[in-house]
Length: 287
Image (cartoon, rainbow, N blue to C red; front, side, top):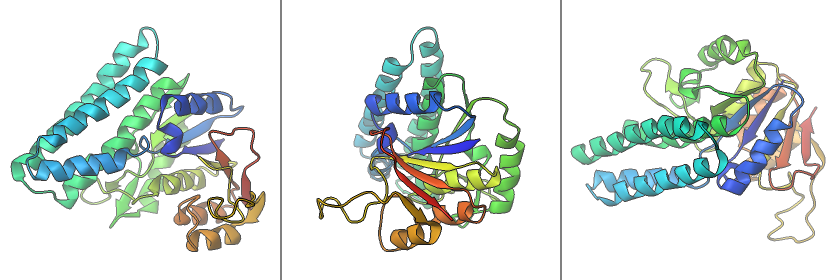
């Protein structure tokens, strides 16, 4: 079993999601798929929350735009009798999101708890929709699995939940959202921070002793230099955990820095691959 994580650009458009569908459905072994929100959606949700706090009707226009974006994806990628059920399940989440913005407008205040809740809908929507797009996939609600304390993952509680849910999964494909979690004590939504989807995938891979963790993104792997600055930059084919950690600490944006430790401790290799260039070899990070 292995864990595949797809970032925002990898799930941001219909064509990108067709690539995700192909990649996942052509895996020879069972996989856990961890997904980010659709590209750019988290910032849009935050923008709408700020407008709602000012009682600005623009917040609801943004919700309409977000709804249309997700509906377009479903209409193009889900066919037959499944589409009505899919639209109904997603519609329920949008109803909750709209109510959350209404509460913010009524209070004319944006609290941390409010913001944590509204941004969680990005991954809640994407994971549900992607589970409906991929054949034979099963949806798992990350809010029932991931636990945190002061925005740090509560590993003891989380690992126990993973063992009781994903650890007992006997299907081919499980899909869950990254980044989102609930506080272990209060049970309110308390997320893991930007970049947290990579970290979620690493925690799941470590807890399940996965064969590998694959981070699917929009670049071919770690590069010798920023290709925007150095046109002669090339992909680093293989590196150690320490080398990858050092590059992340120095500002490389390929993967979220805390991702490396949980899998390195279990000697689980990490592959960095390009969703839009499936033939590229990518970067292998290992001992």
